[in-house]
Each structure stands twice: as structure tokens, then as C-alpha cells.
Length: 482
Image (cartoon, rainbow, N blue to C red; front, top):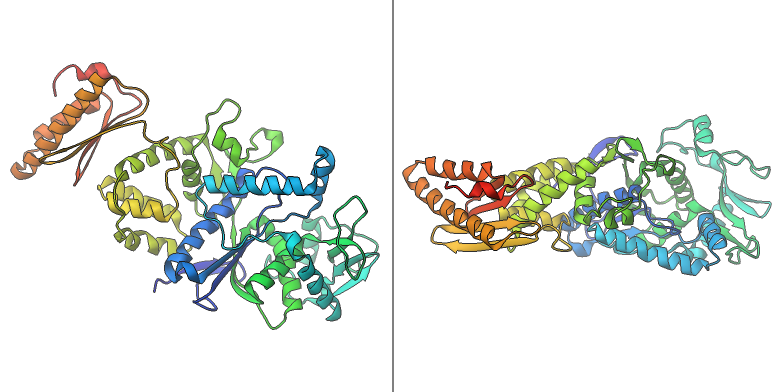
């Protein structure tokens, strides 16, 4: 079996991944708060853990992996959006949940095994809070229930922060009813105009952190394999999850491996509305501020080209480069059957803490050496399935006695130019075949040079030849002879 090594935030080192139960590998990833469109930073953990999900399914079998990603559909941001818009909370959360699924699907992400909504697990949250009070880890005060941080000795171990740093980082509300400034809310009262549920402490709603602990326990058990999310969630969200989960179920260990992706920038700067570089995923897909839309496959490529534990920079230049690379790959693999020999090349790198930059370099090697079947397997495995024909506006393929000749182009091109390119491609296939026998490649080089002077890219593989007019294509230079 393939050995997977993952960097564990909890131990701060790369470790061999050994699932608790190989027949039921379990992963939990924190999902979105559904009150608006997902911005492009929200997409990074989705794509990172989508690749990990695909790898786990490959190694352990699709039926032996459970991937849970939640929807937070009870939150003060949602309440505020409802008050601003005059719409109901149910309408807003239903709409934005579907937006999220559509946008992540456009990026090639598989849907998780289970996608629980927080509001469907309120009774389970109440039971967990009752248990924490009973065990002396939580207390009721002024209509609230708070977790007593001092009752958990290992609080802060995940993030490695001191108490003073945690207080400053959390910007905690030093409410008079708190015994300790770090104590966090498990349950809070709701006024009549806010969502609320009956509880032993009166009508109210859960705090943010308890939902993930309750849903993870109900769906994955007291101990499971992997918990993931962005490193902005490490503190306080994940730190609080660990504390309340380990105190509520001391017989379990909660998550065995913790994985965190780094943050995203745009054109070298932190994304913010004040800088005018704040984009939603839908902005990129459909185009914004005069910029054209970017295909989901291109967005996916740019995101995966940076290792998940390094800061990622979204730039227009990277998107343009990814577009050209994927055009080449999709043309090369069009109609090709995937060959699982590609797995032997890319899976070892994936298994080494998701080293996707190395994987993409191996795929570039496939393309340059005409290994279309292996490249096709890798594209399918990593979720690079073309959602439309954006990559290919024209194609002509012909079989000769010596292999296939391909002519590919984008935009419009006159039939006369297509015929000229087709004739040159057929001729190149033939002279290349003869040159392989005679070892004299001078005519092959002459035709390639002629096409290159006209701005035509030439790619040769064991199956044939492809010619593609580039951005600097000048059809007038085809008027001479090669």
C-alpha cells in the first residue's frame, strides 16, 4: 500500500499517516458560514482537501473514506444580513449554500460524503454542553454557558500561543460574567427577533465553536483521523474545538492529524475590499471590472501550483500561464484513454504531504514527451475535467500512413489557412517517419523552422504531430515553401 506522509500541525512534523481504521478513514474540514458568496480565499482549503480526499479514496477505496464538511447556518453575520435585506434567514442560507456548492463544483471539487448544517444538530450541541457542565468544564452565567479554559491543561498546545498572546489574538470580550477572559461561549440567549431554540438555560443559540465538535462527534466518533482548515482557524476555533471535545469525551482523542493551509494574497498583497483586490469565486468565473472570466480549471491549476503550507499569490500572469498550459494538455489528451501508469509517477509526490508543485512538473514532463495517456489519467485524478470547450475552438485531426496529424487553433481561421496548416502537418508526419529510419532530420528541422517563423507551435509525440498557431501567428509567412 502507498505510504502517505502528512505534516501534522499538532506535532509540528511530517508523519506517516496511519488511519485509526483503514476500513473507515475519517476527515473533517471546517466549512463556510453561509451569508454571502465565497471569496477566493475560501476556495483554498476546499481545493487542498479535495485533493487529499481524492488521494485517500485512491489508496483506501472510495467506500472506505468519509469526508465531512459543515455549513454554519446559524451566525450573527447571517442574522445581520437578514435584518439588512428584509429576507428570511432560511432564504439567505438556502441560496448561499447552493451558491457555494455551484462555485466549488465549477473549480472541480468533489462534494464531501456528508455536508451537515449546524441547525440540524442543535440537540446534539445541547447534550454536549450539558455534559461539559456536569464534568465541571463549563458553567452558566447571566443566561450564557461558557467553557472554562482553565479546566483544560493543554489549552493553547495546537497553536503554541501563550495566554497573553491568545487574549490579544482573540480580541476577547471581557464580559463581567466570565470567570476568565479566555472563557468562550457555548450557548447564548436569543431575543425574540433572533433565531433561538429551547434549552435548559432558556431560549438561545449555540456559540460558533461547539457546532464542529458536536457534528464531528456524531458523524465521525470521539476519535477520527484528520481535521483540516485554513491556518486562520487554528486559533481560536480549532483550539476551542479540541478543548471542548477532549473534555466532553476524555476517552477519545478528537483529531489525530491536524492540517492547515496557508493564506492567499492577490497580486502580492493581502486581499481586502479597501485595496480593491477582493474577489469572489464567482467574480473570477464570470469576469469582473472589465476582466474576462477565468475557467474553473484554470483557477484550480493556479491554486494547486503552490504548496498548501506556503502563502499563495493569485496573479493575472499565473492565470494566463495556466490557461496556456491547460489548453495544451486538453488538446493533447482529447479523446485519449487514461493510462493508470500515470499513478506510479504522480501518486508518490501527492503522498508526500500533497506536493502538488512536483506533481504538476511531472505532468508537464508527460506533455513534453507525448505521454498523453498518462497525462489524461493525472488530469482526471486531480479533477481537471474540462467543463466546456473554452480550451479548443478549432481542431482538425487526420490519420496518415505514418501517424496522426493535428491542427488546433482558437478564434476564427479561414479554410484556406486551415488547409495549408493541415498539409504542412501531414508532410511533417511523413518526413519525420522517414527521418527516424534514415537518421537525417534536416527536412524535419526545416519544416519546424518554417512553421516557427510563422508563429506556429509544433509538438511531436509517438502518436503524431500537432501544429497550433500561437499568439504571434502570421499567416502571410505561410505563403512561401518550407
